[in-house]
Amino acid sequence: QVQLEESGGGLVQAGGSLRLSCAASGRTFSRYGMGWFRQAPGKEREFVARISRVTGTTYYADSVKGRFTMSRDNAKNTVYLQMDSLKPEDTAVYYCAAKSDGSSSYPEDYNYWGQGTQVTVSS
View 1: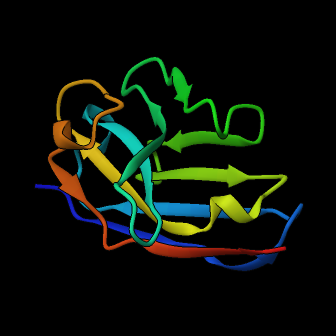
View 2: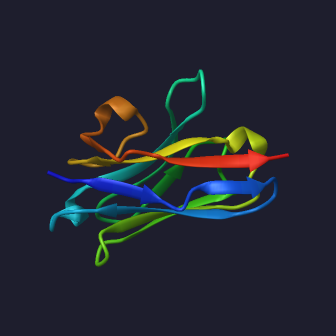
């Protein structure tokens, strides 16, 4: 069982930066692949980034590649999403998720979800 809690969302102007954190409970955090997803009003939840559990290899959606950076600190049971050069179209609720075997770009593959944190980018 893993419980996830996101933080770090807020209101920022276009071109600005935010750093999201996702703190996980439990002592087996390093066994989980982790992902960040987002959902804008009226849209489906979409993949943003993911990180593997062992090598820390990261994968990004094309829409955020080069602007967002995902990382994990297994000692702190935390994953991060550094978001730079933010655009109004990045406005959404951002969720972190944990997958017990590997990571995936598909939300239906994840076992555990946080409650989400709102990111609003003004133009």
